[in-house]
Image (cartoon, rainbow, N blue to C red; front, top):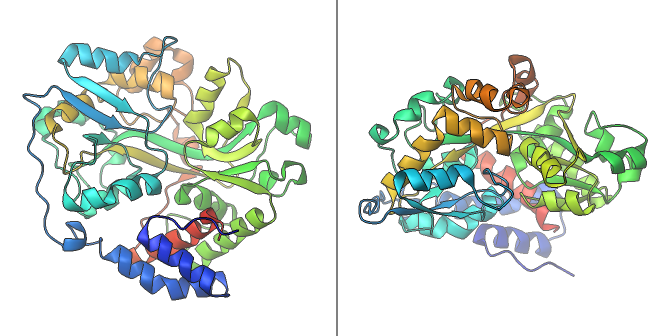
Length: 413
């Protein structure tokens, strides 16, 4: 039985065409590419489909001491009573009420929910959002984000220099990294050992080609992480367009499709993949480093492991952005400034266990927990960073074709 058609018009058309015709994946994409490109490129000019420049919403921060923050789950400090210490301190210091929502599960799905409002410059129901850098770039390039008032973010001076210079926002005037992200291989230590006889996976072949793990392997719905790791295992340099071309990408797609068709890979999910690891549905997965450290804390033990594949891992960042329709810009800027204080960044890092982008946070972390400060997954050394690569920027055409190819696997067409 066919799955229901997706709501997104580009993907609906793609799925309809794929169902209508019996053809190879590449031929289907070539035929659907024009339709997909037409639908998506209509929203690729600044101001969205209309091409009109959007106007920022009136800032009501002075009279309304509140803001709504949409973020990923497991991405802020939490105590045993369910409180969020750093956020509670921010509220006390500023008098600003923060409604914190863990409703950002996946870049594409979240964008699908809000893209129509974004294109109009309307309120999306959040004053502050943390999309991954490539999605933040899309929002910025389309004119969907407000420009920071740097005078209200004096702690911006603490941004790690490595995060400056990106073509889409070279001076970080519309986005600031919230946390850096490493994607690699996660596994249930006990279950993996029992199933394979090995202590830990070292390569993607150890999870994708292991019969004992059939149906118990998961991958991320983030294309750049899942396909990026596969590409690196196939000897592709994902930072260079001369190496990461369409043929290389489609070869990686073919590889993943085969693993899905064979039943080896059973789960393709966003942040909710962690639930499959917790309940045992998956034993191994392409996953994000910080989540695994937190899962161990949640289960009061050392139950899950995380390794960087021998061929390399992907690295990215989730970024603070203020949508054009947000009505509490100044309040949001105060919150960004708060988390760019090294002391607050260190406290946050101690819980979320992702890479902090704030200069001085490691020194503060040494005061809190010296062992944590030496954790390579939070404060990676130059040697560790050599094992990671960032997925290169894609052209508009590549974005259409690559995303469509990956979505086709996700949709199970």
